[in-house]
Image (cartoon, rainbow, N blue to C red; front, side, top):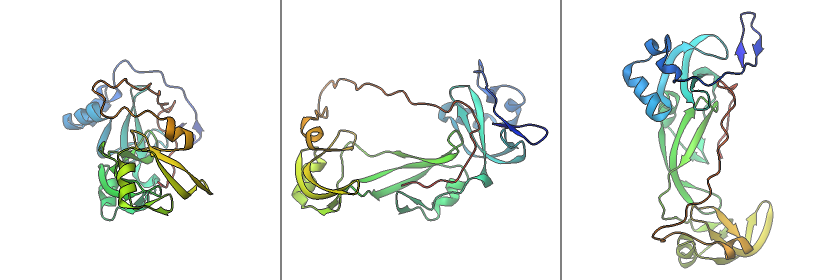
Length: 232
């Protein structure tokens, strides 16, 4: 979406550039060598930049990301995004200042409703027009003492953390109460019933067969209309 001289927003299709837009004038002169290196290696500026926002056409402080599908830059005005104060229920406190400045923040020990404890990084992604969270949990799954609303013993916690199948009665899942087998996949996803019993873990294999990759859909246009968001 691009705003024209009359103030009307129009949808335009952009072809893929042969080289990244940040290496083409006038944008090449807009960014420092360090900022260009950051865009090249990370895909995000990691800070904010005063420049013309591609969607609104106004000069303002923007988050900047690289749109992989078109090799173009995507901008998101800082004042157009309402930042969350919690990530999956975990207060981020003063880290919201770093998040607002475009930096990536580390959020530790997030207790999920299914009993897992995860940690990860959050940042503003101009391509999404949102704050995105990346789960950086280590391969060793950590389980809280409550799993889907059911208090579990340390022994059961250890088995679940080891990706073993455990029968748990009275779990609250999707608004229903169920009693069935539970197991966590290699990536920490909860599996129930037959899915739990039939799942084949590849942890510990010397040469594990790679899983089929799922192609991630990228936005078709740079500069998606930003909106406020809530995580978790």
